[in-house]
Every structure is written in structure tokens, then in C-alpha cells.
Amino acid sequence: MALLLMVVGPECRPHLTYTWQSDELMECWAPSQPPRVADIPVHERNRAYMCSVSKPSGLQVSDRELLGRGWAACARFAAGEQVKARPALLALLCPQVIGRRYPDLLLSSAQIDRQQAEKEDIARRQREREAREEDARCRDPWPALRTRFQATASYYDWDSQPYGIYDAEADNEEDSAAIWNAESPGILAASGQLAMIFTPTQDWATCVTAKALRSAPPHLRRKGWDQVVEADIVSESGHLVMQTLSASKVRFPNLARSGPGSYRLRLYTRPGVDLILIYPARRAA
Figure (cartoon, rainbow, N blue to C red):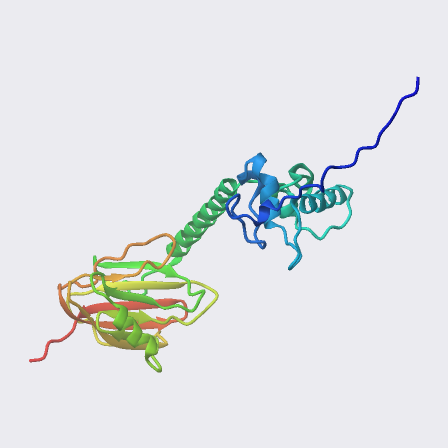
């Protein structure tokens, strides 16, 4: 008995799809940042890959061709060969293969965020611990001039930024602009309800002590200090505050002891130590 075989050809050419070009079927990600595989449902990962992978400019590339190239790259990667495709992109097609060498690529965005938050929390606690240690090393540079309204804290000027004293209820935008626009503000600059202290940049903390007085302090003494300068500041609300200086969040008292009005700031400074005295300005007769 003879078996007859007949070759039957395709009735038409193979149908190729181009779903990566359709905005209705999927949302495309920027090629420079493919989505994390753990964030994409399994049934959406092929389309996510097709959307994220780079395509030849001006050419029509089918879904089948894009996926074929990706699977081939996965096979070469598994074999230890060099591939041009980014591991984060191939992880959408073969996460188990990519995860052996890059396990972090298999983490979800939520897991990455939690890891980052934990790192930031550890760094914050470390800064707070170091700041408390620095605060404990700081001493009152003028202990004989004692007041209940004073505090001392350490200050790091890593980024050459000044620290400030300001009226807590004032809009200090114009005063700040006036200080920054000044040609040479010096180590103490004041405008209206804001004063800035430009501590010289150094590799160690500056111990800052501020004392609020009800009257002018004793005569101006310069011995033991590199510079002594003065400036005026106004407090319309009667609430002058020192910005937070260190991670330990030492709280300074209200520096406007006499309520609303004009005040005089006297700054004593030497390497590693700033002393600020704040007292009511003399009123004209």
C-alpha cells in the first residue's frame, strides 16, 4: 500500500504584529530607563521589553523579531558571552538568568525605596550621634556673662553656606536677596529682619553660642578673638530665632528678650568658635 504525501504551502504570508507601536495597547517607557521586572505582571513583560528596547531608526521591526533578538541575547548572556543589551532590559525576558549576576535588578521599586529609606535613616542617626558628640565638646566662651536665654551648638560649614538669625514671622526673601547681592557682606551681614553669619570654611565644626540680653553687654573686648563686628536687626513680631545648626537639633531660645523692636548683634569669632550677643539697640533721645 503506497502512502501518498502532499506538500501544502501556506495560504498566505505569515502575519506579523507590531504591538509596540500602538499607544492603545501599551504605554511605552523611555529607552534609557526600562521598568523594573518585579513591577511588571508576568503577562506584560514581553510587551514591556518590546516597548523599551531600541529599534532601528526608520525600519519596521515586528514583535517576533524584537523578542527573538532578546531571547538570543539572553542565551548568550547565560553562556557567559558579552552582550550589548542592558541587563535591566534583558531582565524583562529572562529574569532568572540576569538575576544570577545582578540580583538587585530583580527587586521591585518598593523594595528599592525601602532600602534607600533604611540607608538614609542610618546616615541620619549617624549624623545625629556625631552632632551630639560635637555639641558636647563645645563650651561657653564667655561663662562669666551668663543668662538663661542662651544655647550652644556645633555647626558644619561643608557647603560654604552661612547660618542665620531671623524674625520667625517675617517674609525674609527681600532681606536675603539684599544680603546676597551685596558686594562684600563680610562675616556678619544684616538687612531688615535677617542676619547671616558667614563662618569661614574649615574641616571641623564651629561651636556657636548665642546669648540674648536685656541690655548692652560689658565693654567691647577683643582679646582672644580674631574679629569682633556688630550689626542691627529688627524683630516686628518680637520672636528672633536661630536656625537649626546641627543634626542634634539644639533649640535656641527666643533671642528678642525685649519683644518687638530693634536689636544689636555683636559677633565675636575665632577659628572654631562664634559668640553672638543680642541685645536691644539704643533708642535715639
